[in-house]
Length: 227
Image 1 (cartoon, one colour):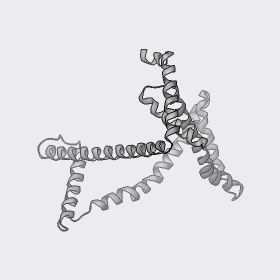
Image 2 (cartoon, helix red, strand yellow; image 1 turned 120 degrees about the vertical axis):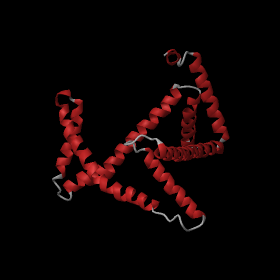
Image 3 (tube, helix red, strand yellow; image 1 turned 30 degrees about the vertical axis):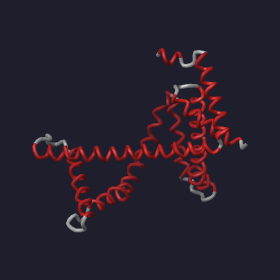
Image 4 (tube, helix red, strand yellow; image 1 turned 135 degrees about the vertical axis):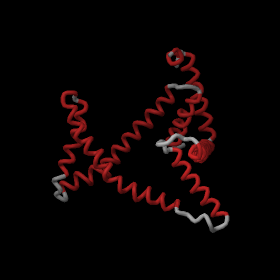
């Protein structure tokens, strides 16, 4: 049997052991996930960002001005030195300003304009599609008016804003339902993987159960219950 299968199944059951209560097995799987994720993204940042945009750009292409960006990034770490922590504000302000300036155009053309185009629909023709378009326009307008706080929501404005609340609740409910369905889909996929090797799964379930029983009998989690 492949060792990878045992490790994968064991970590899955360690995560599911949180359904009992917080325990060392769950913490082990959690810490492994966080540590591996952090290491992966550090390596990814080096390979995809630092190496091509700094090292190769300076050494190979001769873009020496990028050393200034490197120095600014070093100043980020002055936050850990209280006497010179104020220096970290310079690169932070530069990053925030550049990010905001560059992404205003990107989000404007990529999100705002497309969303505006999506609401410019024909609701006078098209049969049932026209009804769908009309509901979209009414829902958008009423939802936006709900966030109009320059006037008190009374009278006609109050009625329209309440309609917007209903549309918002339907939207939030659909988003939540979609999220739940995606999580259930992941759980089903993981369960099917566990069923591929039932003997391994059964052995690990017994081992995890025994481990949790011994840990609980030794007073595991007593401090957490008291607090």
